[in-house]
Structure formats: C-alpha cells, structure tokens
Amino acid sequence: MKKGRLIVLSGPSGVGKGTVVKALMERNPKVRVSVSATTRQMRPNEVSGIHYDFLSHEEFERRIAENQFLEYAEYVGNYYGTPEEPVNRMLEEGLDVILEIEVQGGLQVMQRRSDAISIFIAAPSFEVLAGRLRGRGDTDEDKIQKRLQTARREYLVAPQYRYVVVNDRLENAVDDVQAILRAEALQTEHQLELLKEAE
Amino acid sequence: MKKGRLIVLSGPSGVGKGTVVKALMERNPKVRVSVSATTRQMRPNEVSGIHYDFLSHEEFERRIAENQFLEYAEYVGNYYGTPEEPVNRMLEEGLDVILEIEVQGGLQVMQRRSDAISIFIAAPSFEVLAGRLRGRGDTDEDKIQKRLQTARREYLVAPQYRYVVVNDRLENAVDDVQAILRAEALQTEHQLELLKEAE
Image 1: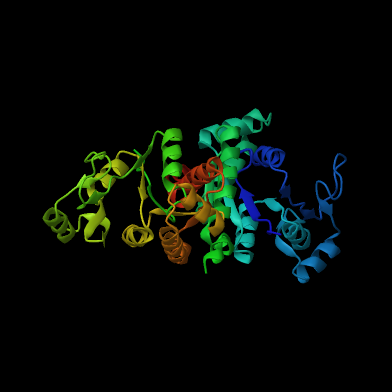
Image 2: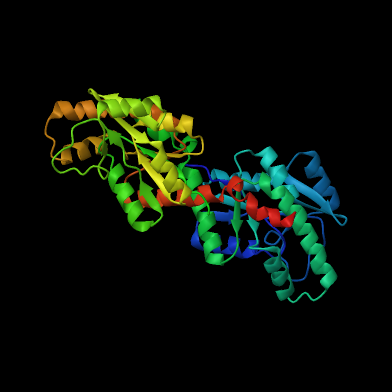
C-alpha cells in the first residue's frame, strides 16, 4: 500500500487553521490529524486521547529522553508535543496525517522529516487578522496586540515552509490545500514505479 | 501584473497530449499554446501562424545563429523549433504558455529556463498505449512497434520532468494538471510578497 503523507500546517492564531483542517477531513476520508501530548491539566470539557494525550511531567520527560516526539516545546511551565509512533502508524496505513502546530514545532518536524509537506496558512492581511481576533469576542486589546506581534514573528519563519496558502474564503483555502496534496503525489519521485514498465 | 508560467508538456505519441492541452485551454482562459516554427512544406489544410510558422531553411538557420529558439531540432531534413520571443511576450501578459514538445526539446527548455514547469504525460500502460495507437486507424504494425520503441526511449527521459501525469481518464488528467498549476503558484517562493506585510 502507498504510504500516507506527513503534512505540517501552521499559521497565526485566528487565521482559521482549525476550520481548514476540519473541512479537509470532511472532504477527504484519508486525512487524519495527530493528537498532541501535554502535561497541562485536563479541562472539564476535554477527553484524553481526543483533545490531547494527558501525560505526567515525568512520563513526558521520559519520552523526550527516548526521542519519542516528532517535536515538542515547553510553554508556561508545561510540555506540549507530537508523539511520533501513532503518526507513523497512520502513515503506514496509507493515511495523510496533518500536524496543526506552532512554527517552532513545524521547523523541528521539517528537520526531522524532510519528506513532510509544510504549509503556512496566512491571513489576507494583518488588518483582517486583527479583525478576526477581535471578532472572536476577545475584547482585551492588549491580548490582541500580543497575538499580532506573535503573528509577525511567525511570518518571519513562514518562508521556510514549502507552501503559503491565504485563508481568504475558506472554500478557496481548502481547494488550495487539496491541490497541493494532489500535485505533490504527481511529483516525478513519487511516480517512478509507473515509469519502470518501459525499461 | 503577475507573469505567466512556462509549461513544458511531453509524452509519447498516442498518449493524448493534444486532447489534454485542448481541455486545459477550454477550462482556463489564461492558458495558451506556443506555435512552433518549421522549415517543412506547408500542407493544404495548414495555416501559417496557426499550425506552424513556416520559415525558409535560411531564415531558420539565421534565427538559430541569433539564439532565438527556446529549443529546436532537425528531423528528416527539416527544422522544428519554438521561437522564444512570442512566448516571452505572452508570459509578460500574465498568460500561462504550454509548449507541447518532444522530450529532447523539453530537456533543452528545462536547461534554458529552470523556472519551467515540466510535465510528462504517461499512458496507464504500454498495452493501453499500443491500443490507442492501433485505434487511430493506423494498421501498419511496423509503424506502431516503432512508435512504442520511441515511447520507451521517452520514458527513460521522463524522470527529468518535475511531474508525471497518467492520462487514464481525460478529466482526471486535466484535473491533475490544473492541481499542479494551482499548487506551483502556492509555493513559498511565489508568495514572498504576501509575507512582507509582517516585516
């Protein structure tokens, strides 16, 4: 069976990554998202294994020592990371696996897995992004300005991604990602088996 | 205005390149094909400037000396080639220009223009290709065997193309080429302008 593809999807907070991923999975029965692991406290509405794998601090560090993460980071005292084993299992089953992660994690994955298809989701403009952050009902202007600053730092890393998709209209952005996945499969290196018949 | 893209499209005789190109142009108002130049005799049903630019032997050689061809070749005593100037003009107008050419010409273009998007159209199998050649009403089995031999040589060059598209169902092959063109435009190097806003 043809192996699935590893897809790194990043972009600023508020750009609509989650909505793009959800629409992709609805259209595409072979697309999955990976479940991250974290040491932070489970929230009332969360389910372990669905929202996150909730691990103890010790367990997380043991797994770091065993090189079990595709990427991980520490954030305000807690670890967050992507366990590699379940991702590999899905890829072996022919499923395309999306990692919806921060750019620092994205760069770690790209270094570890040069075959990963990396896509940065950008907003049509910073004005639109600010508008979307405000539209979420978050009225704390300080928080919004901090998020926009973070977004600017993320944009500086974006050129290291293979593709940049603008999430203007959702349908259009999802079509873009679909076109990327389709075209990547047509790259000659993935089609060599097919040309062998002529030899 | 955004410049158009140069697309090299090759594949064995009988694979349906012309049909793919025709369908692409029908779906895509910004796609054009380049008109080749040749020194061979014009046939009764042909129009100069539409089917070919018909040039004298001397004129063709003068243009070769002036480096005016994107690619050219000599074939049974006649020259065939792609004049560069009209192609560049269309690209400047933002049109995507398809060169439907032989693999030797394709390699010349790729060397000269590393930004060219090269696509090799393959048959689902050699059996299918043979069937299509026979289905054209050509009953000379010697001719068909020669074409298949040529196809085998072409397949050996195919790995130097960026993409390989199988023309199984026409609609599918056209969708593949469309996805390639869409995805290529999303590659980060073509999106850098967009990321600049963050700086």
